[in-house]
Image 1 (cartoon, rainbow, N blue to C red):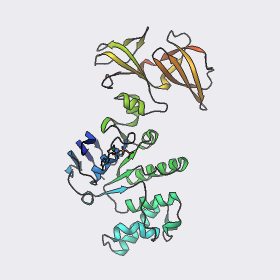
Image 2 (cartoon, rainbow, N blue to C red):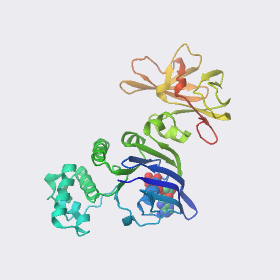
Image 3 (cartoon, rainbow, N blue to C red):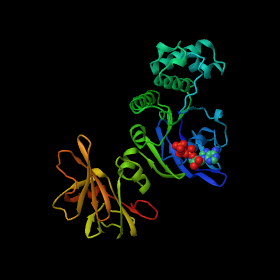
Image 4 (cartoon, helix red, strand yellow):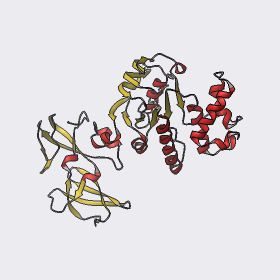
Length: 354
Ligand code: ATP
């Protein structure tokens, strides 16, 4: 088990900065997600933590010890890649035991450890089978087995489920999370899939263009996004972001929004000029008595809820409402926003006013 602390970590490739001054802490035993769009620097961050890439600046501490310039094999971590490189001519058992045999561990001990790992992963029955004919899921389990048999301080995984189809992916995600909960080892997991990050992670770092946008528990990031990027990247559909010109004084509990006044959570920070109002689709209600008017431009039925697209003065809003509410494309309606759940952002910096 391990606590991993990142301080002002930076990586330049020539004149291109892939990771800029990132700082966050991964607590012992956490399932930790590095989340962001393609090219945002999450793989580079993970590779620096693993010792596969040296930082340009900043520090990495594992259990309080600085390891920034140490090699991968001096860090006692296991890396699980997306493409599992198993040894095709070896059996499942030999693949799993390989790291132990190459350390020169006595045979009896190797056998005991491999049995234990096979039991945890539910693959006792295939230990003597060649890996060549295995299904995708079993290959995944063998690769995991090879990673966990060394009992490393931490596991690093880079989009491990990326190559799997949707249904199987969900199943393996549950297995991975259950395995983590049984073993309790610190796990750092790279994904571009916000749903996967929300479902599996104890904590999430949201990255964009090499910058840490937000770091925290999934629910906190969802409820209180720190930036417009985090707000727009998480959630499906994501948070509605409505630009407007206005001003908000410290302690104010409402704000002029076009021709109406909107109740907002009290903020300590003032804001003026170009602002952005953020509201999640589930916090938008259709309310015919409201003078905040909208026109319905689309209705998407999703079973128990429906997503209604509404055209308003400031752009477009999506509302998630119960399917039992009757609503038709083209109709005019009033809408109401849940004041306790709104976030105001400064448009230029993209940062939430708190
Ligand atoms: P993806 O999901 O596409 O892998 P990512 O968020 O993991 O994206 P990185 O792989 O960390 O992103 O890459 C971040 C940026 O750094 C990208 O623009 C990439 O092209 C660049 N980059 C990564 N490795 C190198 C390298 N060895 N040399 C030059 N540029 C690199």
